[in-house]
Amino acid sequence: MNARHPKPQRLQRWLDTGEPRRLSRQIEHCVHCQEILEEFSALDEGLVVDLQAATSSPVDLKERTHGGVDLRLRNEAAFGSFVDLFAIGFDFARTILDPDLDPDLGPGTGPDPTSGDEPHDGELPADQSEGGEA
Amino acid sequence: MTPAPDADDLRLVVDRHAAAVYRVARSIVHDPALADDVVQETMLKAWRNSPVEPGEEIPRNWLLKVARNTAISLLRTWREDLHVPDTMPESSGGASTTRQVEGRAQLDELWKALETLDEDARALIALKEIDGLSYEEIAQALELPLPTVKTRLFRARKVLKDAMKEWR
Ligand SMILES: [Zn+2]
Image (spheres, each protein chain N blue to C red):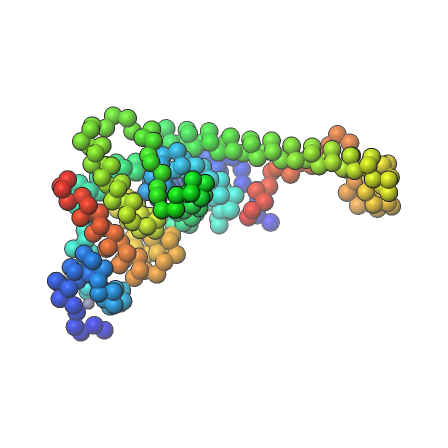
């Protein structure tokens, strides 16, 4: 496709400065120029070793990560229980404070006995098992 | 319905992928503690939203994409919290303790050079030069066109090479 390629000096200048910008498009479409630039920009082994050292993972990373995710899951579960307890307390307070609500029936009258949706005393909805974000 | 993931799946994801995710996270956020957060969040997201059935191998490109997005997101939150738009957290140096002074100065210089690159360029360097992904894999992981991956990586490498010239 590209019969005429930029001279290597021009490619080197683009590599050094990013200029001229229009050359970027030409390079993106030319495998030959990409190969030259691959060579010009190759990192020496020492620099790759430094990069590895700079970003190397700590020896106890797996243990730390296991501990960290366990803690996050426990916190989520505890927070979920707290929210559930708060919701129960809120419903109870509402039934006491709102004269239109019948405390025995809870919010809304005439529950459908087949729905199975009525809250049972002392029972929390178990909703921690599903991830919920999938 | 997709079955719920179980704890063994989570352990497996951590054991297999934590190190690669950490390297990408570290290259983007610099600070080891923040990188730890990125790894943990990435692992939980991967466990809960895996594109494959429980027990199957999670595709590395997909996981590293989650890691990159999580790292950038946490880094932005960190910057917003501290009102420092373009800086990276200082490394608290907890990861390695026995570096010699000269080696440490050299790595500090390398981090300074990395800091002049944007997040995606740092991720490109980590994925190609450290994790050894192919250009095609990187293009998928970062959701960038293949030619863009190449031209950006050429320039990013050059920046690092120039910055580290005195140390070679
Ligand atoms: Zn060409």
